[in-house]
Length: 226
Image (tube, rainbow, N blue to C red; front, side, top):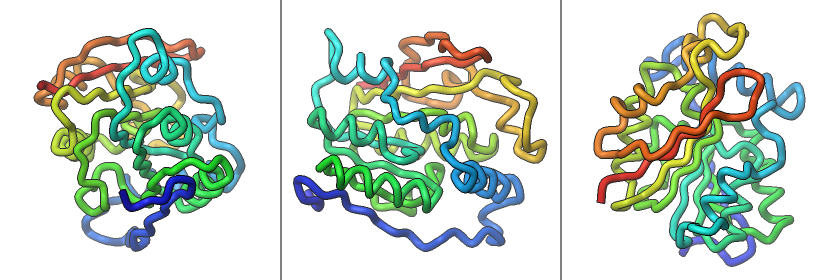
């Protein structure tokens, strides 16, 4: 293991060139919108509370055995720290500097070993996160990704998934809100079970549970073929 027992490791990747031909206008808009949420204060998805759905998967009656976990869009580290405290070897990725910095501070204060990577969840091949992983956790990362980058996200996870790996994903349904950023069509498109069935080849959609939000949300559980 690269990390020490009680200190987080933060890996800095070069800041993305927002004018690069590899990243189009919609991707730039997503990046800037996420930065604005953190600049303005706590983003709505970063509550500081580990959701009961993850608690049940990790610590419930039929809990998974601890292994290697990758969190996509980790924010300020609440759930990565929770997983590390429950025996998981955790790597966590986020696109926003401020989020990764705060996650590192919180993990160090908690004495939790978390490998933190600053980067794009749809370009995992550019990051030091080879896997294999037994668990992937996504709290509204996928549903914020531009539609044309979602296949790359799915492919990146599939290449890194151990046989039988689980993916627990929270996402907004289609047209959950008045789209605050019209140029980011994914934020109005949301995510559906049919999309995940089609997009995650080699995975089985085990469960779809509606969320408790005032707008349509869902918890999706997928399992990689053995």
